[in-house]
Length: 313
Image (cartoon, rainbow, N blue to C red; front, top):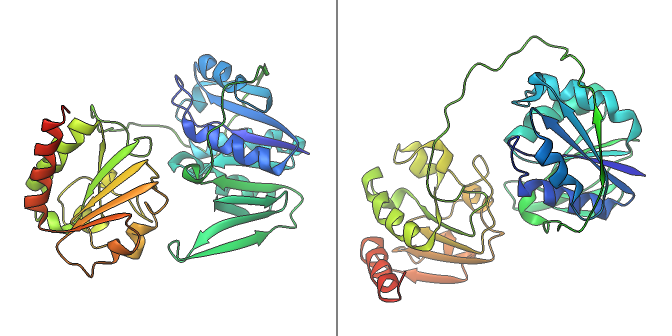
């Protein structure tokens, strides 16, 4: 058996989501190959070759792959799919964009967002906003899978795989990258941060998120939000944590003024330690919290910040 893992990267650095996908691939068994598709991503290919358990790296370099559009990625992956029994990608925005096309072209089911591998043909994935776990056994000869990065350990750097250059086929559809607008922040990226502090509708308005940002700056944390806060216009969409936002699993998650709707819990319940601050003692967030504080957030958060200052943060 041979498994292909499609690397997540920005053409300069390998994303940790790839390391999680490699770990998932190792649980399936067999040789692991990593596909690095991009433009000028030689350093990424070298980094992929150092991952534990990787036997070979395939490097495809082309202008059409720079932004990893779905049409270009699908054409590339399908062109080499015949050599593999399983194809894995992190369940990120990029992976979720092209993997359904790959599965459709190969005429197999897409097994999405897996959180565990039970065997080479049996996988576990969440359903009903994470309230239930579904065990899926696939009879397809070729498995096409997206991996939830937050639930697998990150593969280390003990490998020394060779890097082979492959040609990128011409995409089958007429599409082109036009432009992108990316938010910039000195704080860690939400899905990569070790500490996340999130606000909900209880924050009242967007200006009040400043009190969370002060704490975040002291802890080198990322700032997130519930869908209710995003829908209310308090903060931008890229702050959203939840089923329809970003899935995070930091070492510490601090939920402030968040009631704990099912959709939000689906995006953060795998955090190692969860702290909840809410004045409603019946709030569902307390059911998953390791530590809960029933208090007015406008008193508790500034007091927390003051204690951090005393501690030298």
